[in-house]
Length: 190
Image 1: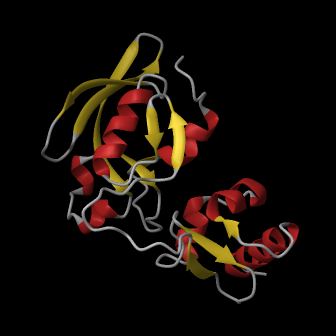
Image 2: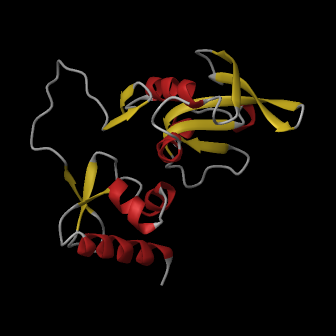
Image 3: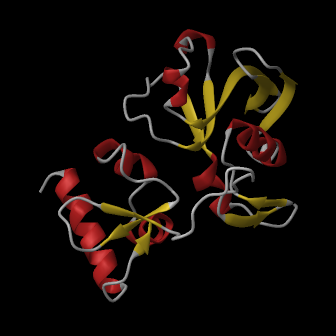
């Protein structure tokens, strides 16, 4: 069975385990062992964090999580996460920058500078006892936005994003997916 078929079978299993009810992407990831990158590799335009998977089709059928219409004169928020002063998941690049600032030291980065131009951030990280190295970081809400924004792969070392969804990301770029990492970090300040 190829990876896509294995993924579809895992979706069906998760839905069956939930008694045929809808399963959120996060519930699926927690129970299946698959990663966000696996989903986006096979269903790049269908599976979004605010959507849910339904049990009956051969490919994930996506339904909105809310029956309410969006009000145009109000901001929107991500799902609640209550993580160290951040009440909701990021919904844009600025939210990613803020969240990275909260966890940068814990992830081993010492931020030297943040700027509006490419790359967004210069930081250092320890590569051996007493040895530090400079890294160039680009912040993106979704990793594939790096490509969409026309950034030069040679001008960056690390993409820090909320969602990793760039299946063909060059191996020379390290991707730090914050939505996965914060699950392993304490929600309270360290």
